[in-house]
Length: 165
Image (tube, rainbow, N blue to C red):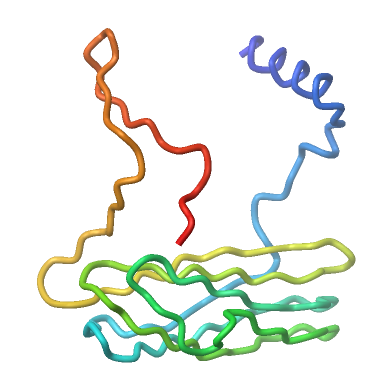
């Protein structure tokens, strides 16, 4: 336990941080809920209803959606929707339409961002979409290489940056 606090103190000194810089809120006052179909077909439009709930005092509320491999975004075409200021709070709903090009469990990433009482806040949600027949497994893309260390442990070496799509 003592070593953990020592390491924390060293990190503060090395990076020039104060405890106020490090202490972050683990939850966002902005919440995201969604409704999506349980089963979907390859090549067909998938309509997802996304609702953002914002507390009073929210400004610059926006939604950004990014499809992962196997999904193509149809609307909004650029993946970004701005809702503006919500000083009285409340909720806004946006319908996002994607098309799947392959079977499996595919994900649509949702970023709800706003400034709440002068502080920037973001809530991130990954929406799972089951496409095709049969048991759905998460799509696992091979991005690294497998190696075995001197003790016989299998390791996967991953790239330092994400591959460009």
